[in-house]
Image (tube, rainbow, N blue to C red; front, side):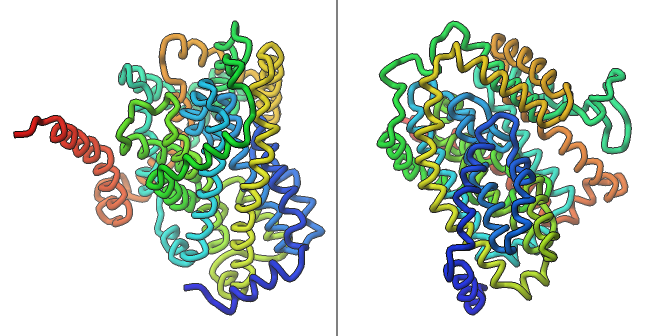
Length: 504
């Protein structure tokens, strides 16, 4: 239940002066720029600008840092759409249909779809946080490694659907990614497949690998072309067409709401977050679609599902921070540092004793959504110009940015070398019609799955099935997953047969 008195105090804190809002627009711009540059993570931007907040009051600091968070979540989707470069691991599924749309000259519509889905997803995530912060906190406390295993497994099931022409190739690419994820020190302290290279002790760096296999390999494949969009008449950056894409988003209300809810719930689980939410939402949109064969070729539904879940997970990740004082990921860890500097500890006592501050942070983020819609639309006019740059200039400059981004993440030459190695691997896989996305999903989720499985085995004393029977949330998630994976296709098949059956 919302405390009405605290709500009135929160509104007064936010709107009695302009000071809480002074840094919101700069924060959104910083997030958009960092999110749009390959290799620059949202958490990196927040960490760089954290010292700026030391001279601010707590509310102003929170609004500034969360505005970077909000802008960055959308910025990563822009490059995924225009150049097949997911700005972060949480934008992987955005590229699946966003980039094909851009290559077809529908980049304006794709950018509009992404902007609208991001805005609505963020809005839904924070509304749920406002209405249900205490129940969500209680739910998060009950999430253990067994529940996380099922959620990650749900994300991994997308691997099997990423290559319609050959299920075997999709599974082989995904298995290869899972094998790559096992390089380095295991959860139990065993060194594997490092071939004596100290750079591999922590495993293959996922973001440089993702940049190489998605972006650099695609740029290599484009050699011989003049522009990203070949048809000169379709290279314009049109605000009316972007707005048309915004309008198209509302043709898929079920996809939009489902993606937003998936993102908010999964985003609330510490350690899982937007990367898994992005993939699970995309997979469910594909499975429930009447035209699943269109996915991966420029389906608006896929783009909407991915971006809405990616953005709504922000509100979900704030649940654990505000209600429990637990950072759900790197970005919320930076926010926790800001909490500490201002001598504030998140958790039940924070919600109980400073409810007005909690509400003001949530309401401030809802206000950021409105500003994101305006600023995002204006920035698209600039960011979208990439389709008008000749590939002779674009390819070398983006490859240089990819190498720089890889170095920025690892701090060593291992980053650029990973980008180079995976760009060659991606090029070979594309030539042989293997889905590079399946390999990235395996690499991204494999180590996470291993860690949660090990913890489940340790807690259950080697009897995971018996332990699972004592976990009602895990059982419920497992049953829902089975119903979705097995039941939905059967229902669709029965519906098709009924439709195809002649009357009489």
